[in-house]
Image (tube, rainbow, N blue to C red):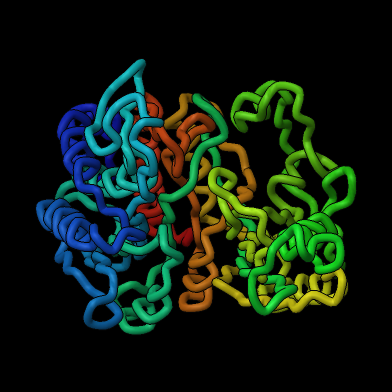
Length: 455
């Protein structure tokens, strides 16, 4: 018998205190995958995640691509014969907390303030894990679909072994529908489905002008300064309005949504008086145009610097690529631009750090109908927005390659003030409850569609 919406809401409300308690326990585990000294904590996080799913009847187990690789959790709980198979994705590793002094409360001690639960991973993405756990608790032995799990342990460090994990465990992960709980909603009170994401190409660029450091007073004015050469090269990447000047990169239209100016300024944290860069609709600049930033720079510190010309200077560039682009083309275009514009005959080295492909999803079909109906009901009649995301989830392309017939639903718990990856990351608790209701309703709808012969 199909569970009613009122029954689902009631069961979510009943499960919510335990779900929050378990979420807080997960947040207390500093599973920072980028920190070699915390790899034991990543292991502990995987074990705790597996325990949570085992308690709900999932045959969860920890897998890794090879000995010493990061731990992922996979498993299955079967639904009715002939029901669709739904793969639930989240990740249990988190970003570094960086300077704890920037936080208003301890990063790994969950703290509630003004309706939000603060802590590293409280939203990204341990709330995603608990969304899946909650759905299983709601249905118990009445699960309307077969659920499979993939809870990753290296998403915050580029998912290096994910392709191997997919290949090694494909028979246990293959699904009709993939739910990626690692995105967000349009606003408080307005749900969303993410329909496009930019890709990412990161490169290290080195400019060398000397074989060794020399005295600036003796040689300045004749010998090119490597930092100045690198600065000129970086400046060549944009025009005076901030438009990217790398030729040959793809660009495209974005979803037709209004992003109000006051929201943009508030949510971005842009300083008063600072202007936007680029041209064209703002949502295109954020979601479907390429964007390049300098995210790292090797240079002497100002304090204690000497009158010395350093032999080489290095920067890390992050290029977000538009849906429809390929990493290979983006690398070629960026490399050509850098080679053409390096000044004064300086020696140039460009090394690719990592890449991830952009994605544009087909958002039609029964799975999306089930999701939109669930979200509209969970948010009391407010229909979900189809939105793009300027960030990247490169592994979605890997999932689609491994399971080309699957429908991919990108959802999540975040909102414009979540501050994922930053200080004071926080989960809006009232919205979190709606997310839990929405996922349970979506699984119910998917099961009902299959029973009716729609899927």
